[in-house]
Amino acid sequence: MVYNFSAGPSILPKEVIEEASKALLNFDGMGLSLLEISHRSKNFEAVMAEARQLVKDILSLPERYEVLYLQGGATLGFYTSAINLMKEGGDVAYLNTGVWAAGAIKEAKLLGNVDVVGDSSDKNHSYIPSFALSKPYEYLHYTSNNTIFGTQFQDTPKVDVPLVCDMSSDIFSKKFDASKFTLIYAGAQKNMGPAGTVMYIVDRDALGKTGRKLPTYLNLQSHIEKDSMLNTPPVFAVYCCMLTLRWIKANGGLEGMEKRNREKKDAFYNELDRNSLFQGHSVLEDRSWMNATFRLNDDNLGAEFDKMWKAAGISGIAGHRSVGGYRASMYNALPVESVQVLADVMKEFERTKG
Image 1 (cartoon, rainbow, N blue to C red):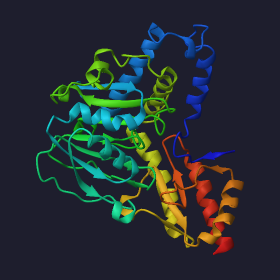
Image 2 (cartoon, one colour):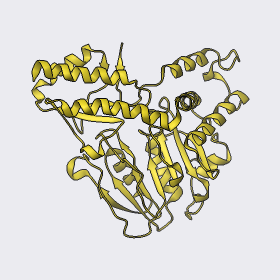
Image 3 (spheres, helix red, strand yellow):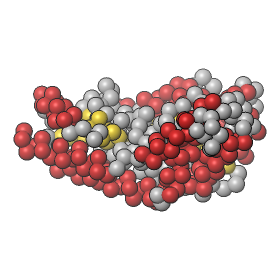
Image 4 (tube, helix red, strand yellow):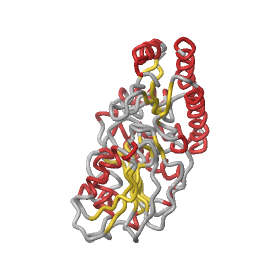
């Protein structure tokens, strides 16, 4: 048995993997693999339509919102979100809470004036910074969950400007009001499916107002007009997203995922706070539900701890080089039993080495 704590690409529900594997051999009774059919076939058009509608259903999106599955990951989303919403000569506000937030800031600066109104780099992004907006910005951009540093916004910022958010690593993990956002983008490979597609949720009423001439592929209106198939979409990734969204809906939607994820994060952090051999990276009030970052108080014990967790069948908890230590990624599909195995290993390690 392997307990998969990979930060991404990450664990998927077993049911999704089983169903997707069948489609690789014979999709929808066609006698053809999903990988070799036309994306213009009615069979795949139905997949794309359902994958988009499931997002609307799960998030209770108002009619004015559109859902798209594109390519380029959230990395292209940094620039795509900015070029679609930042007016010529306008000002935008960004929060710098880690590597991916800094990447979004870098790309937005290619287009106009960016004010970094909150920055946690002074303490290696171990907290969510407070901030205030000094003027009526075109929008505020933030990264809701920080996979590398293990911090997360516990609530949606309350501001009087449009909100743009990179939700790559915590989309669909707990309840939130999606109608408060002008644009959300999220790479699929954490809570939605395999790597290969990025989902956009956009208020179509906010588009086409920048005064810019946009390249066709970067223009979200172009993709809306073509029902998210302006070009050949990542067929397999979209199909797996559809299956995963079905799984989320069948397991209680956002409320069900929140209950599931609360149980997991409580099981892990309760042991972390109890255990005398470990400490967390992030401050308590900003801890991520998705990515728990922690380290040994004595790094000299690292080799022995590594041997113990590997022997238990645990995979993927080595920390990012920016933080060191360990990182337990607890995305939607990870069962609570996996978290309990890790907590038990930490408890046993304290018993033998404490």
